[in-house]
Length: 130
Ligand code: HEM
Image (cartoon, rainbow, N blue to C red):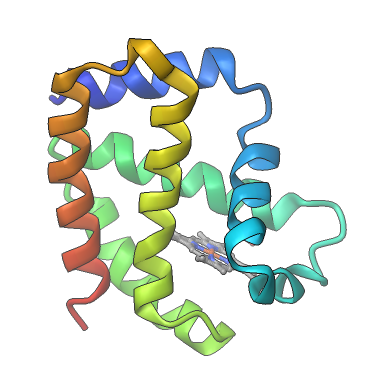
């Protein structure tokens, strides 16, 4: 179990309010071209569900779980069909990490930086594996 990841996500959850607002605002700030992909998601339900799956994936991988790794491979294929290339899919995990790091501010520890660095290497290689 990687407590540094879990600890950072716990503090993030306590502080960030609705993480969907923060994360998607950041995404569309750097990639405004992706916003139209979500026009059908009027209620934000798909955005919320997607983000909760992303957090579940990170928590699962931090605790050594395997199931979510397979889900990444499947979602990369689904997203490619939506018009989201694997590289852009992989970048989303980095964007989440940056939001967590900035929200934690001075509470972001070297152990968290190391654990997230390693995690992002894994999410990237899993995303680009196909
Ligand atoms: C910038 C990167 C990404 C973009 C632009 C994107 C875009 C989208 C869009 C447009 C949908 C809604 C599809 C629909 O119309 O139903 C969606 C759904 C979903 N995405 Fe992503 N995605 C990204 C990254 C990811 C990542 C990294 C994951 C990680 C697992 C993920 C998991 C999901 C899941 C599980 C759903 C289904 C949600 C539901 O039940 O409706 N996405 N994504």
